[in-house]
Amino acid sequence: MIFNRAQQKNLERLQNVLVSDKQFSPQKVERVLRCDLYNLLSNYCSLNPTDLQVKVQVQKDGTYKFDISAVSNRLKIFGSLPDDYQ
Image (tube, rainbow, N blue to C red):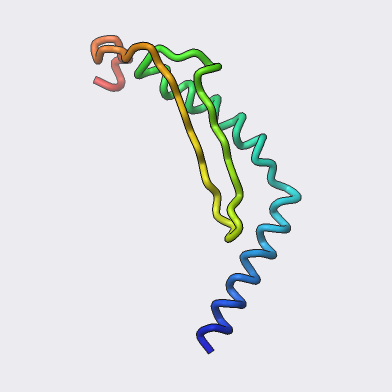
């Protein structure tokens, strides 16, 4: 009985993923996340947009995996952060 509920739950999740897959584009989410992360990380370090990589992958079980990589040549000292953060 528990196995049947788990199977049903997995089937529902798969159906949701398949339906949302038609409406969801990982590439669009990657672009938005990349922009937001660039704005955030720029407060803490010197960063070129080309040094920030964002990858969104849909896993087999319907979950999402986010791979984020950023390379910076220097961190900003706290005195250079906006006043809101001090």
